Every structure is written in C-alpha cells, then in structure tokens.
Image (cartoon, rainbow, N blue to C red; front, top):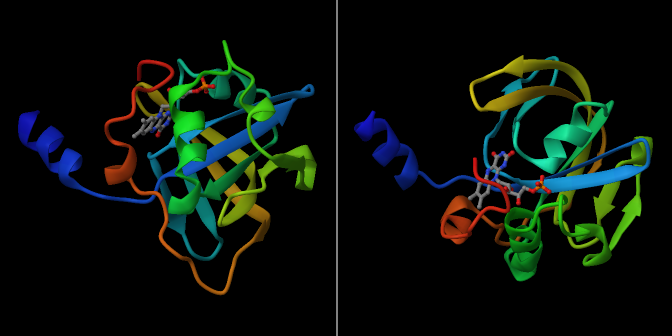
Length: 160
Ligand SMILES: Cc1cc2nc3c(=O)[nH]c(=O)nc-3n(C[C@H](O)[C@H](O)[C@H](O)COP(=O)(O)O)c2cc1C
C-alpha cells in the first residue's frame, strides 16, 4: 500500500544493534523494527528478519542484547547493518566483551540492555522476539544517537 510505504519511509526512529549468542556462536545486526510494548511488566519487541544470520542464532538463544549507538560511532551501525555474519566476523572488527548471560556487549554503545526472550511471533517476514529486560547500562543522558535517517541508504547485508 503506497501511502503506508511513503509514510513509514518519512518517519525517523532510533536504530539499534541487537546481538546474541548461542552455542558459542555470536551474532548481531542493525535493527529498526523495535518498540517498548509494555511498562509494567517492562517488555520490548525486536523484529528479526528470517533471512539474517542473527535470526538463525537468536532462534536458539535465551537472550538478546539491545544497544543504542552514538552518532560518533555510526561505523558500528554500518558494520552491523551492511555486513552479514554468514560471510564476515563482525566481532573481529569491533570492541566487545561477554556480558550478562554471555551476551556480546559492544564497547562503543551509548547504552544497552539484555532481555530474556519470553516468546516469538510470526509477524510476516520478520519474527518478533518479546523481551523481558534483565540487565543493562544507561548513561545520565544521551548525546546524539544513530536514527533511521542516518542509515536509510545503507545496503543491508541480507535482503529483507
Ligand atoms: C535501515 C536498516 C534497518 C534494518 N532493520 C532491520 C530490522 O528491523 N530487523 C532485521 O532483522 N534486520 C534489519 N536490517 C537488516 C540487517 O541489519 C542486515 O541485513 C544485516 O547485514 C544482517 O546481518 P546478519 O546476516 O549478520 O544478521 C536493517 C538494515 C538497515 C540498513
């Protein structure tokens, strides 16, 4: 539906790098399809494309880590959005450490949280992962963050 596609292309919203790990395999990609969906209990929904390497690892994972990216480290968004773990070891090309529940935590993120995957939903060509936040780190305030308008021209590592 053209008006819908036009409308959503004009919106701007935060972009996230979502990482995960299962069976010692780390994965992560740039994600725009997200939202907080409940306050009490706190819940957050992450949409992962079935084509992505990240989805295939997330399928077997108990948790996801959701990072917001400062504009000064926009290269992180480019790395995770335009390369695929099927061909590139993204984690060899950025700084990270193992955090809560073994989740890869990116050193240059402005803030992050780890969420337990409570359930998964077929949403079309993306699979919704409903998260319960269980750990995280937030600054007093954010400087400028990477948003959709910064990365809309990026060529995704996988077709959506
Ligand atoms: C602007 C933009 C938004 C994106 N949003 C999502 C998204 O919401 N969910 C998703 O799974 N992939 C999204 N992607 C695509 C992945 O980040 C991209 O295909 C990535 O290279 C996949 O890496 P992987 O195969 O290692 O998982 C987006 C890419 C861009 C450029």
